Length: 436
Image (cartoon, rainbow, N blue to C red; front, side, top):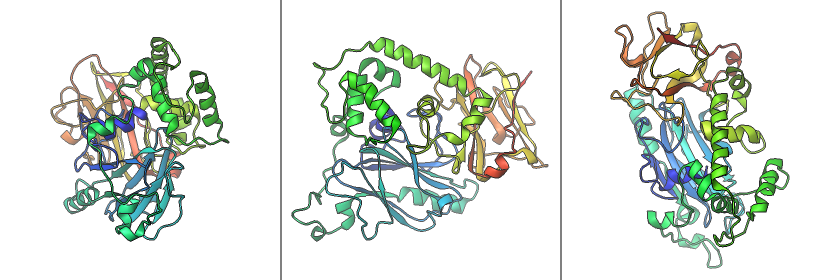
C-alpha cells in the first residue's frame, strides 16, 4: 500500500492522481486502460480519490448528497486494512455530510466531537487514501449528470479551515490556521521513492519499511501487528527510528525480490482455484482484526483494495476446462435470467490480463459488461457475453469484450454491488467456456 497510496498522490502518470497529499481528484467517466497504478480496478463506478495527510492537522472530507443506488467511502492506510466509514448500505449519502480524519500522532486533537462534523474517524496511518465509489447510472442522463456534479463537488479542508475563523484557534493551540500547500516535487521529497513492489523489495525494503512503521499505529494486543514488528526488529526497523543508509542492515535484495515473485506467482494461481475463492470470498477487504495476515498478503498481489462482502462480492470465473484463459482463444459466458448475479445495486463482469491485473487495451475502450459500462439482455432476460478478437454478428456490441490475438493470459472477475447474501448462498458463478 506504500506504492499504491503514493502513486495515487504523487505519480503524474496516474490518470487518477491527486497531485499531492490533502488533495482530491474525481473522474466523471469510467476508468480505462491507462489506469495502471493499481491491479484490477473497476470499470463500473466513478472514482473520487482523496489522498489525506494527518501528520500536522485533522482533515475533513465534505460530501454533498448523491442520487445513486451505490456510493461508498473506503479508507486505507499503509497497513492495507479496509474500512468503510460511509456507504449507501449504511444509510449514508442521501444528505450532505462531513467526516474528520486523524491519527494517534495528529498533534492537538484527541477525537473530541466538533460541531458540524458528522463523523470522527481515527485512521491507523498518517497517509491514507479515501476512495469514493459512485454508481453513475450511465443510462439515466439526469442522474448521471447529478452524480458527476456531486462527485466533483467533494472537498477537503483542514480543521482550522473548516472552523473558518481565526478566533476558533487560540494562540496556545498547536493547530495552525494557515496552510502552505507543497508543490508536487516538495511533497515527493518527504517520502522514499515509490515504484514497483518488486523494485522496493530488491532496492530499498528497509528504508520503505522504516518510513511505514513510523507512520502506522500498532496495537499492542494485535498478534499480526506484533509479529510484523518482531520480524522487522532484527533489521533495525522499529517505530520512531530514523533511517540512515550508512547504518542500515544489509539484506540480499535479489533473494528478497525472488521470494516476493514466487509468492506473487502462487497467489495468482490461487485465484484460479474455485474452491479457494469460494471459501474466502466473504473474508477479504476487512478492517484490522477481521482478516488473516495470509489473505491480506495475497490481496496485495491480486488486487490490494476493495470493499467487504456486505458492500460487494468479487467472484472469479473459472473456465469449463479449468485452464487459464488465453488471448489465443475466444470465450463465452452465458447466463439465463434466473442465473444473473443476485445484486441489489448492480453487477458487472470485467476482463483483465492475469499477470498485471490491468484492463486489456482495445480500440472500443470496452473493458467490462454491466449496467454502467453497457450490456444488453436478450428477449428472455438472459445474457451471452463474448471475449473474442472479432465480434460475432449475433452478439450485441454491449456484450462484447474485445481482445488482440496473442499469448496473453487473462481472467474475468465479477462484481456484485450490495449483494443479496441470502440468495448468493444458492447462486452458482457462471462458467467461462472456450469457443472452438
